[in-house]
Length: 101
View 1: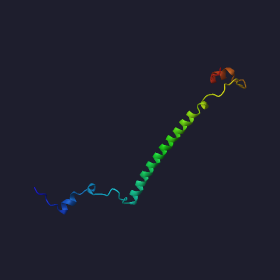
View 2: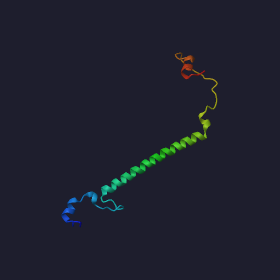
View 3: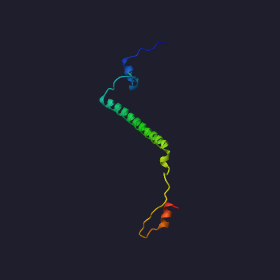
View 4: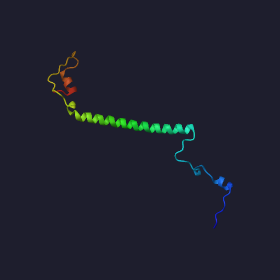
C-alpha cells in the first residue's frame, strides 16, 4: 500500500511543540531562560557547597575530638568546695543540687 502524500495543511494541523527538533547544545533562546538556567545551576552549586562544608566541619570535629581524648576527661579531682551563703541556702542544699559527696 503506497503511503499517502502529505499536504502542507495536514502536516501543519498535526504539528505540536513536542515534535520540533531542537539541538542539544544550543544556547538558551531568551534572557529569561538563561537567567533561569544559571539560577538553577547556582542553587545546585550552593547546596553542594553547603553540604560539603557541613561534612568537612563534622569530620574536623570528629578528628579533633578523637586525637585529644584526654580533653574530655577531668584533669584533677576537686578536693574542697568553698560555699559562701547568706543563710538561705546551706551545704545540704548544695550537695543535693550538685550531687557532691
